[in-house]
Length: 258
Image (cartoon, rainbow, N blue to C red):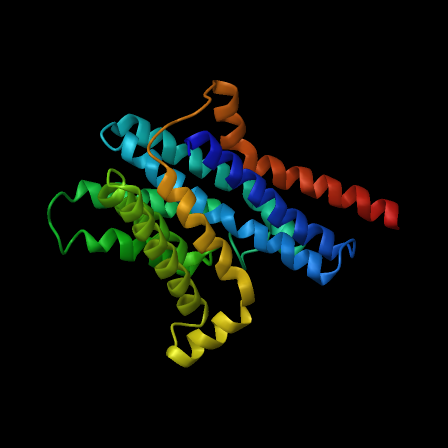
């Protein structure tokens, strides 16, 4: 499993997810098809977190490149937000829910601040808590659980990345399982076990892609795969570009339907 393969799976999964939202709202697919498309889309976010954490590991000793990466994420967040709002709230400006790029930006910035605190163990918890709290307050997509997953992927890569496959698989399964439970807990309002179980039940089969993803993460051993500046830029700008394309597609289909 290579970086290229993980990136390809991430963008295809995300496109499937958002296409499912658009087609269902236009009444072009039934609920069962919509649910299947959303289910296939659940691979995307953990992969983005994993790739972001791996990118941070390679950039962490180069402050200039870290700054450029942060600026790029900020630019992508600005470019994406109007089209994300249009897809999710039918408005180019909505403060009710922010795109996942802002979650990734907070996770990346939290890792950078975490690294800068050196060996001060107690203080190093603050970046994780601060980034998670900001995601919660700003109501970003995946919120605090998304920020925690970025950190979780980083620690998985640091602790399990060079071990044997069965141990990496156990680590990846543990990471995905803990993330999904935390996701349910956060979306259940940090309530008790009953609230978490109720939310978990209402989510149905959405946990399946997270566990299926574990073997793919465990199979990753740092290989890059095909590389080119064009492929790199396509991956970088895919999120805002595909949202803009879906908006145009939606407008075209809605016009034909009218």
